Length: 521
Ligand SMILES: Nc1nc2c(c(=O)[nH]1)N[C@H]1C(S)=C(S)[C@@H](COP(=O)(O)O)O[C@H]1N2
Ligand SMILES: [Mo]
Image (tube, rainbow, N blue to C red; front, side, top):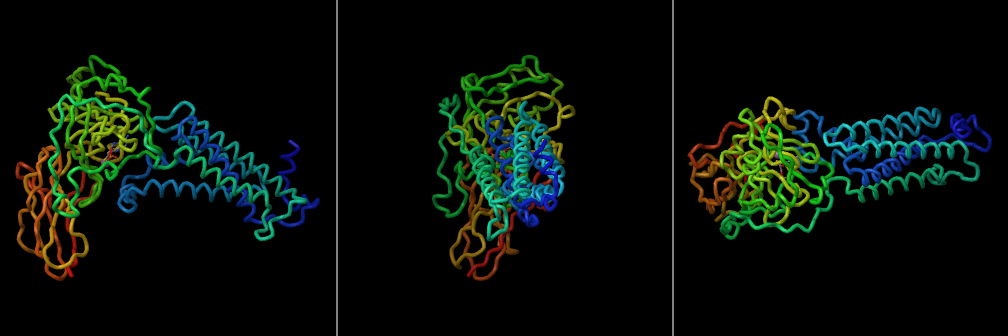
C-alpha cells in the first residue's frame, strides 16, 4: 500500500521536487484519459463477449429502453435515424465530463475519483446485465473497463504527485505522460469501437446463404412509373434505400450455424427449427410494403420489396395453438418483442418468416438471418427482425416492447399517401404531381389531388402489384407561376377514404392528408 499512501497525499504537501500546483486541466485530462483507456478495454472485452455489453453501448441501450415515449418520438421526429449516433455521442460526452470531474477530485482525494469511476462502471454493468437478452458474461466488459480506468488514474496521480525530471509540456503546462495517456486513450477507444463495430453501422453479415426457390413464386414485377415519371418513388425500393427502424445500438450478429427458431407457448406440439430445417420448408415469395407506425404523414419510413419466406401459418399449424390463445409474441435475439394477433396470422394473408428481401439474403440491418413480415400491420406489431422465437400466448399474459411504452396493441396500417414530387420549387409549365399510396392488405382504390382550393382530381394509378403493395400515382399539372399548395388523399379498394383529421403517430399511426407547398417560377 506504499504507493497508494503516497498518492493519497495532496499534491503540495508532497513538496520533495514537486514545485507547482497541479493544473485543473491537467487533472481533468488525466481523468478523461483514464476513462478512455477503460472504455477501450471494456469495448475490446465486449468484442469477445458480446458487443452489446460494451459499457457505453449498454448505457445507450438502457436509455433507449427507458426514455419516455414522447421524448423518443421527439428524437425520431427531429433527428430521424441519426438519433442513435446522437444518443451514443451524448453518453460519451456525459462519461467524459464525469471522468474529468473524477480526475480533478482525485488529485486531492483519490478515493473520490476512484469511487466516481466505480459508479460509472457500475452503471455500465447494470445496464449491460439487465438488458433483456443479456448474456452470462455481460458484466465483464464494465468490470474490466472500470479496473483499467482506476488503474490508469492511479498511475497518473502518481505522476502528478511526483514528477521530477518529467516537467510539464511547455505549451499546455500538463505533464507529458498524462497528455500521452489521454491521446492514447482516445485513439484506443476509437480503434476499439471501430474493431467491435460499435455504433450502428457494422458490416453486414454475408454468410454464404443459398436461397431456396419458392414453392409459390411471385409473378414478375411490372414496370413502375419511375420509367416515365421523374422523381416518383420506384415501384420496388432498393435495399440500400429501404428504411431502417429498430432499437438496436449494436446490430445483432447471428450465425446460421447456431440460429434456431423456437415455436412454443400455448401449443400442443412445440418445436424448434434449425436454419437448414427452416430452409427445407415450402417457401412463398410475395411483394409486400412495410411501414413504420412512427412514419409521419409524407414521411420516409416505408419501403416495398419482394420477400421470400415460410408462412407463419404453416409453423403455427404444426405447433397447434390452443383455442384460448389470441396473440403470437415474437422475440428477437436482442430481446425486442412484438405481439401479433393470432387471428391475423391465420386469416390467410401472407405473413411469413422471411429469409430474403429483393432476391438476396436479409442484410444484417434488416434482420439476418430471419425476420417476421406481416402484411397489413405496422412493423412494431408484426415485423420482428433477428427473429428467434414465436410464442403463442395471450394479450393479457404478454405485453410487447412497444405496447409497454404506450403504443397501441393493434397496429393495422392506415390508408395514406405521400406526394413525392414536386418539392419546393419548379419551373412553370407542364409538370407532374406524383407519389405513392398504400392501404396495406386492403388495396388502394383511388388517389385524388387538390391544387390550392381547386376541385379534387382523380390521379392515374400505376401498376397493381396486389393488396399488400403500395401503388404509384401521378397527375399531369400545368403549373402556373406563384406559390401553390398541393394536397393528396387515398382511398382503399373498398372506397373508404383515408382519415382527414390530423393525428400524430402515437399511439397507432399518423392521420391527415399530405400537403406540399411549391413555388412555381
Ligand atoms: N428486433 C427488432 N425487430 C424490429 C424492431 C426492433 O426494434 N427490433 N423494430 C420494428 C419496427 S418498429 C419496424 S417499423 C420494422 C422496420 O424494419 P426495417 O428496419 O427492416 O425497415 O422492424 C421491426 N422489427
Ligand atoms: Mo416501426
